[in-house]
Image (cartoon, rainbow, N blue to C red; front, side):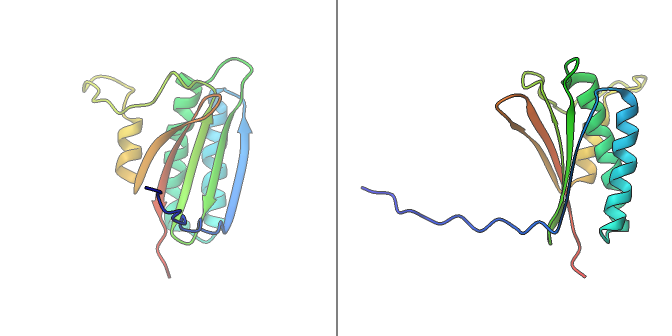
Length: 143
């Protein structure tokens, strides 16, 4: 029995997009965070700027600490559609997949993905040919 060829829904039109690669250094995390806050506000979503900047900071921080290789950049992509602001951070380490954990009360690290999960409408990890992309989406209010 043949399976009917069902059409996929058309992808949402991207209203604004930004892609920039960064060196795997701690200072790049703050650069990506500030750029994200500015762009999201410039794109007409000032209420989402703080949450988006925090998500970028956490995902970029994880890329620098756990996902980057020497001399290999990580990439931050922001895509704004009518329904969502998608944040993607790509790094070259596919074997190091992020997963939330529950840190001890006295630990200084380990809460980043818990913050991402609390702020984002949804988040996940997509494997790539080389590396992975960790992404999160924030719902955009129609107005």
